Image (cartoon, rainbow, N blue to C red; front, side, top):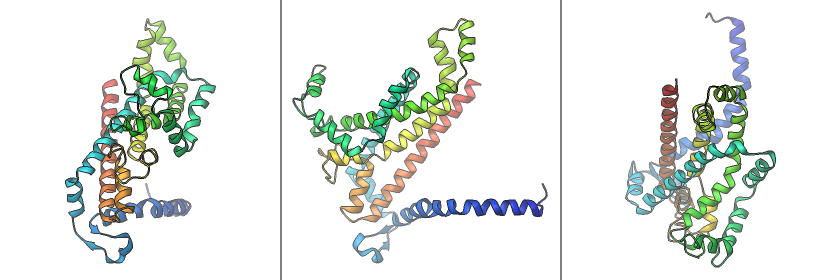
Length: 293
C-alpha cells in the first residue's frame, strides 16, 4: 500500500495521541523493569546507592544457594496451585450466581486487605468456633495463623475469599455471552445437562478461563499484604517462615537488609517465572482449542 501524505498525517496524529500513554508506560513500567534488571547485576546498598558496583551473576548465585529463597518459591507455587484449583471450581458453580450473591461475593474484593486479615485472625484463634468446627474433621484446635502447617492455607483462605467475587463476575459475564440457543439445540439432540456443560459451555468459556487463571496466578505470585499482617512484619514471614512468599522475600532483602541487588535479582526471577507460566498456559489453551476444532 503506497504511503500518501494523508496516511502520514493520520499516522503522525495517532502517535501524538498515543504519546502521553506511552510516556506513562515508559516511566512507570519500562524504566523500573530495566532498572531492576540492571540492579540485579550490581551490589547495591540503599544508604550508599552511588557506590554500587557490578558483580555479574553473584546475586543470582547467592539466591539459589539461599535455602530461604527456595522455600519462598515452593510456598508461592503451592499458593498458585490452590488458586488455580479454586478457579476451576468457580467454572462449575458461577453460572448459578444471582445479583444479590454477585454483590455479596464482590464486596470482599474491594475491602481493605489488612482489615479482612485482622478479622480472619480473630475468627481462627484457638478455642473459637471455627477452629473447633474444623477440629471435628481432624484439624488441630489452634490459632491457624500461628501454626507452621496451617499458616499458608490460612492465607490462601483469606485470598480466595477476597478474590472469588471478581472471578465469579468474570465467568458470569462469559456465561451471559453464550447464546441459549446453543444449549437448547444440544438438549433437543439428546444431550443432558452435564454434556451441555462439558461440550458447549466450558469450551466457549475458554478465553475467560485463560484470563482468570493468568490474572489469578499473577496476583497470587504478588501476595504480600496478608502474609505481612499474619507474620507481624517479620523478615522471614512467620511462623518460622511458613508464609514467606517471594514478594515478602524481595521486601526483606530490599528494605530490611538493604540489599537492592539481591532483591532486584529475585524480582527478575519472579518476572521470568510469571512470564513462563503465562506462556505455558497460553500454549495449553491453544492446543486445546486446536483439538476442539
